[in-house]
Image (cartoon, rainbow, N blue to C red; front, side):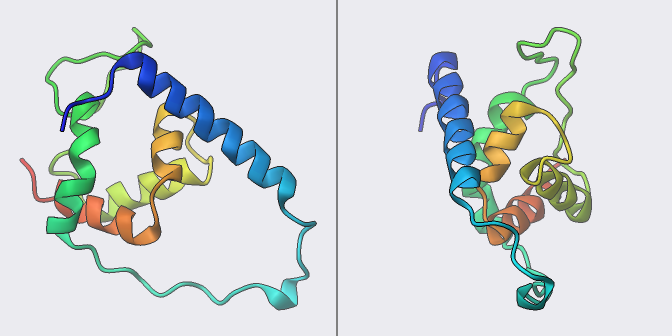
Length: 126
């Protein structure tokens, strides 16, 4: 599998952002509290499944000294971080609590299981 060129990545981010905006606009008004779902059960990560999903992470996070289009922003190494930290960070990006647009676009495409799997895999790296 080959990494996407920068133009393709930017097109993906733009289309995901536009899709998210369209989905938000299509959502009905806030439902009453009585219909809120119970908290989801904890998801157990599968490192082998996460290895496949984390392939695109290596494009930025796996290159020593790599800096992205934001010259003042250092891309952190994520291999070896705790699974709990990595999962929380991905959830925060997906929910908009963390504000990096590329990471938010990536995280929005992951299910809770995907996030648990990626976190389980990345936590095993050195």
